[in-house]
Image (tube, helix red, strand yellow):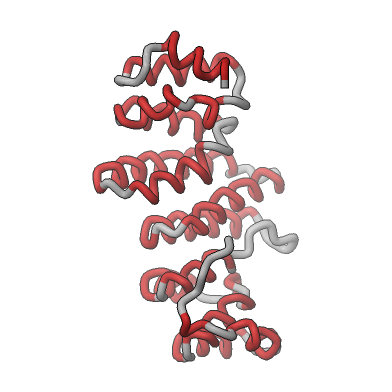
Length: 228
């Protein structure tokens, strides 16, 4: 995702060619102790599969936002050399990263990791979707209680608007509607944002849930969907 970087990262791309010739331990050292522009360049080329998980999780906790965002983008989803076990590892890392930093890149990587598990035909893919849905429901509740509108918008944009065709995500979505009257109102007022591509039985269920949770009456929200 395009974003404006703070001034201390100016010229970071100039270091990338040199960084690509470094070993993983050398890149780790740059990220640990280098100046901001070199840290960002190192994060742009490092293979996280070769870095100890405790080190990566420490980076999630301590790196400035611009570098944590680059770290999220460095998670090697959809790698042709990856495995189901590694995909599950990246899912867990992305969940932890988003919970700690609330940077939307972690959400994007999380969903890409889940899709990678599906593409590989991983036996654990369905369970990982369920695990993520449970986590996302808890995150949604926490963010709502804290009034973090930006993070809630990220969940809507990067998850609910694109993945409600997955059963686990749809159930998570309906749970959020039931628990949060403000969200029920949002969904019933703007149903096409979330429901336009879903089969009718799911559209009806979501809007009925919204009506019962304090949103617009079903007839009105159904009309909103049909005339969008």
